[in-house]
Length: 238
Image (cartoon, rainbow, N blue to C red; front, side):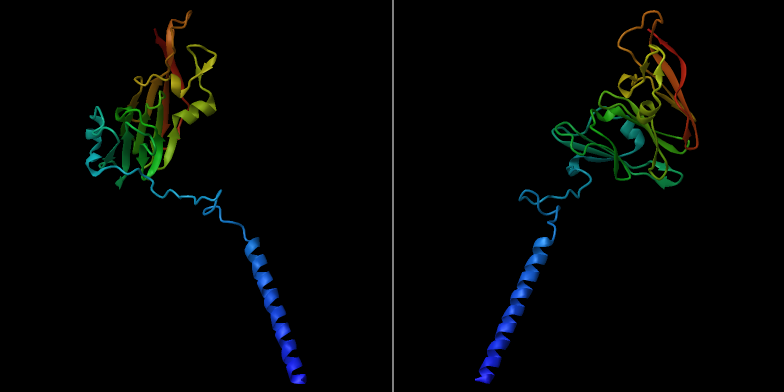
């Protein structure tokens, strides 16, 4: 009898230990936070891993910079067209530049430099003008009814953005005297580039009475990677 009693006591102790372990494991499991990457309102979240859109092989073109600048329209319709500009070399370093356009959807369209999208929503492939000055890659972007100039080093690092300069420094349009120059009121046809500087003009909706001008002309000078503020040059006649 004593032996059977000891066996029963041992069984009860083991049962108690098992129950405690089960409760402990359950509490630990319930206390873990749910993964945001896997659960959200009962739906699995998909992670986008493709940087570029999928473009058909027949709509992907390898071109030189000169060939790209001579294009007048995209090579394909009803979808994506991609141009890889394969001869941009600065300081003996090749820079990968691609322009992706679509006449149907704008997801992932834009201009890519070394796999980074630096501008998007392409109205037309002719709205990107590209040049090399003073060992820097310059991009004139006239898409989205705005004009902007960006400059990049031989490593593909952006060192200048005209739109940010206009926003931060609030450059006055002296054709009016009381408004600022914005990317949306720059004349896209007014840009000119030479070594060490580029110029552009603002464009007003109508001629300003009293000044007989329709905008202001500015010049941006630079040396190495230091760019000066846009300097007023003269008023643009009506």
